[in-house]
Image 1: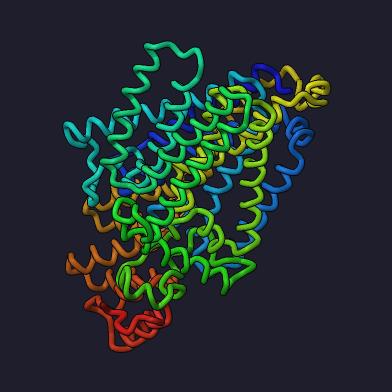
Image 2: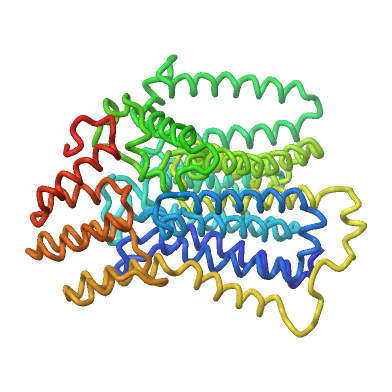
Length: 559
């Protein structure tokens, strides 16, 4: 196993870094206060942790996790395959669409987080991961309660009218609180917990459930209900030696789950309580992602390029509900997002990663009937994440937990084996020299990761600063692409509208043309070219033909 110093360094980075990624929000200096900052911090902690893991534990990783490492490499290879074959801009494939930032770079960092977690072996390490998740949850519970009582102190636009948490969206905070409240319940359900802690935990659970309701996010309710049910399963199984109570409990849960699923599909007595129009909308978004995979089964449309293809891939029924002018840049299903991004190879490799996590949980579950609150928390949080991923958009503050927990449950299973692993634990597992410390290696990784992840944040900050300066020179400079200033369609669109409204038609026309050159598959770029005052009849004709190309089922592309 790793040296105590190395493992402590890794788990401190993961156990403190993951909560910070979920919590981190910038405002006042960027136009996207959530996603670009989270990507930046994700990169820093991912490279920092994995560099320590690889330098000091590469033999351990390979010895205990060959199949897992190979699966991760295959996933990355198919991600690169998607980027190389995509017609969308390279910067979009790498850093993701504006407001999402879930391109290749984000998935690379998530894989590194997963790989780092594979090296954990001590109970203290796994406990710190769980406590980190709980800490991120408590911060959000306190913040959301403040917002409900006093109002929001973060100066961002909230079109939803619900709590946003540190995720910028009521659906994301609802899902996250559903995960967290399940872990709170898993903790207070553990034997030996003091009355004082149980009372505090119950109060925290009550507030969290109230906030989930206030978020108006169906996934939060679904995740919390599922998490609580699983805690009950673990407790009943630990309490009774016979399997009869377990089977009876599972039967009740299965019946309740069946009615809930039927209600979500507008069938049965729970329809009025559970069904929301958003369920039908998600069906259209899912179908569009599946249609993309049918057209590009081996490569997909490109990382985070779903939005460029939605209009072309949607079914005719989507023009009725949600309507021709309602579009999205995500499938509202993490798995189907990856199917659209990279086709079947990427999708299957991702499912294999999830299968490895599920198998590890099942092995530990079968191996012991005891109630270990740390394992229960890890496994339930993992399952809760996967459930919300079926009905939600990928978001870095949530995704980091999905990948970290997958690595952690696999590592937990390895660490609790009565096996040859322990007998061979004294073999050298990595670098053992005395001239370099894990802290130094981690510090170097922190800098490297930050440099890799900073371009979207740097570009957003520069763009906001240029707009606030009202300097034409600064605005044009901020529109000049470079490594620290990658271009994106949203920035070009805002620039065109800004110039047009400022009575600068020549500049509006210039950047409308550059926007199309940057991404010929961006529907809104063609629409702006059509609408601006400087556009010629030839420009309008070309723009209209491309809008029809990109939205072939819509009889009125101009709205």
